[in-house]
Length: 285
Image (tube, rainbow, N blue to C red; front, side):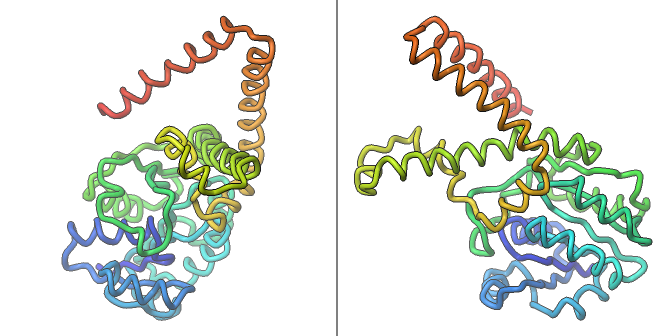
């Protein structure tokens, strides 16, 4: 099986490493706009060789689109045009409505599978890839009924073989849920980072006083703007709705503090503590 990874970064590279372990006879081609990234991907063993798009895609059984979501919507029609008739293309984007809408307009839509691995770190690029990123995590597949059986089976098999758990949603369900459980947390982290940097001009003071709590909360602020700005844009309606809900709670919390209403503050935190049970349940699955 020939597999082409377009965008050999954290997700694409980590997927390649995990799949290589299960499909040792597969041949991996890399396509990347960055020459440096391509060289590093080969050096790290993420792909066997880096090829131009027009050479890699036509000989591929599976093409993985692992670029930022704004690039995915531009590349997807071109990939479907160049894909062999037996081939399949899967995307790993963090938004789905816009990507699926683009796919729906293509006559070869059935060769596309819309997927999103629920995994990642704040790091990016091929140097951040590691084979343990995806196994044990969840994979969401959207609009599976629009993919032909062979393409869907191939994608499901590959991700199951590397130990992922499969779930199915509509694109709109996916984007709404992700706005709250993923996209909002990144915005919160970016905002916290900006707040502290604006107030604490002395970087050494931040380093000296920051606790592990601060580090874990602000960790996502290290994420790539090139990756996340297009996600927020494509999912802007849901993200805006999530932000409005979040801001409402912040304002209520601020009012309780301003009014020295310890009971209200306690109530907010006590209600939020329910998330411990939710997260503990997720970890035990």
